[in-house]
Image 1: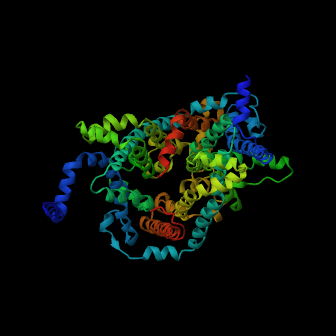
Image 2: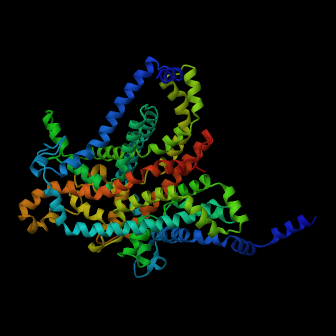
Image 3: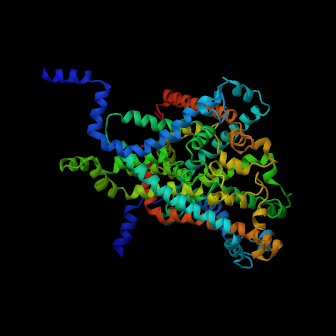
Length: 311
Length: 318
């Protein structure tokens, strides 16, 4: 007991008055920041399980009012939303898997020395600073015969230069070059070394890339807006746009809700429930992305930091 | 002697032989590189070749290379159009204000986070400030529509309760920039701390210990250790951001643009989309010309800022 107490006092330099004031200010600062960050999210959660009338009168401020799940029940009726949900799951899972594979392979290649590397680097980084622009990109996709196809939702934005650089830096800094030399001594070629040594050691960066690519794809609506015409192929975000951003060019979101009036007790009742259902739509569409982040978070902060330094 | 001969011999070897040699030795690397390279060529460099339609009168029947040359016709049309000046001003000011207000906040957050003593609270705070980044643009716009609704939004209810008047935020031109930039900061300020936090954690702890022994306060350590370490990376981020002063977050502006706030929300990126893609009779060449203008200007700005920064402070992207 006494030893511990002594240690505590012995190794620590006591904080000065100025520092204690600073700490208090900092704590207040962070409580304020966290309130600003988290309160809107909390508001959505509690509104999604409250009664529509309470939500419309803005009575839901701290805790759900007249707890009800009718918003979620209504959301389950929106067949078009769930169709697009399935599309988005497909685009995200297949697309991100492909993105990660292609990026890791290229990142490994760019971490080695070979003739022509400078040219390849230039070719890739240049695309970060200059692009053909929206219309030439659109016409190119149309000329390739990919307009209004599922494939374009996978192929568009397949590789991000930034992610590629992060992965390359990670491989360069966290896998020692001695390992490569030893592997070559044992007769390994690039394929063997890549598959047997680099990939097993790249768990962290694979996790980071999966989150980056996965979230970007899940949240993207612009690609679908430009490249798709067929409503059956729409990703989730494009349908959400009709539900949530009701003042934009597409017209009122009421048309969307009215389509499901028969199963929800008439038009008036359907529109009443829609007021809460909007919040529920936000919850069901955002939870996958946030969960992915929270689960991967352990690798995430570490991996991002290693990759971004000296980037 | 023999060495120099072989060296001379190798130098004489033509480009063709050098290529075969690297292919012999490193063909596996090229195979690993191939899918990514193919993507960049097909989806980035093909459109750069296709950008020539800005100088042609594009007709789908003749294709990109078959349409008639018209020179700078579409550029002239754009620069003499009525809303051209307004759109340039709107785009530039939206990005400039976004930079002025949005740029310092992540640095402030990183410094203050680094000073938090309680590790659990620190970890929680760091996790929490990243969360809004994972929300989609559509949902963010939806949240703005819901919270700032004139009839049943929470903001207006609080305004009225406080004795104010209800404001139709999303229809007011004057509120477009505050909403756009404010939500941008809410969503990304936390996320943008990553680089700065990484820089701060890489500072040698001995520096802080020495400062503590010399009697430095926390504020003194921030001023004399943290900030000097953050300046190079901050300048680099500033250069990068300057490169997008005329390119805008088109997808977000598209969601927040309403018939009411056009005076401020009418920006170039949205205009390109609406005349080139959304219009029933899309003007491909005209829209390409505008897009090309923007890309060239952005490119020139980033090169200029980079060169100036390299001259003045030795900090540059390349």
